[in-house]
Image 1 (cartoon, one colour):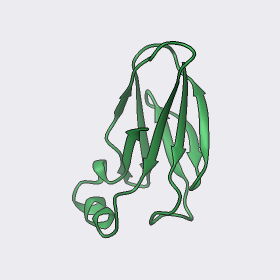
Image 2 (cartoon, helix red, strand yellow):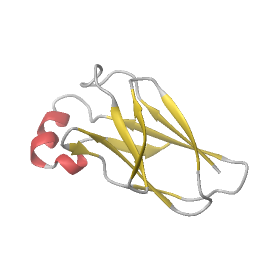
Image 3 (cartoon, rainbow, N blue to C red):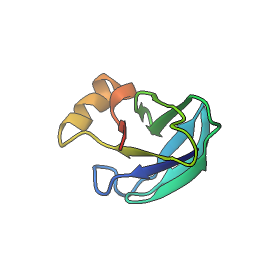
Image 4 (cartoon, rainbow, N blue to C red):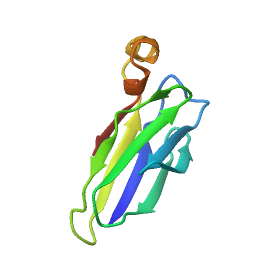
Length: 99
């Protein structure tokens, strides 16, 4: 199983790279619009994005069966919400979802 992790274009941190962890191990640092392809283990894996003290909730990615590709997108909440979450709930300030 292949996992493609993409970062949305734009957002409040367009001059910063977002760290992407799979099962607690950093696999990439993504600029806006950039993506990385990662070979999954075939079992349930946990994907999470981090930037400074903020992070996303963990996203569980399951094996859909070979040779499928799982698309995961990392981004930021709209507008002022990112700033509020960055201070009130930093572990939820980034967004991560299956595409």
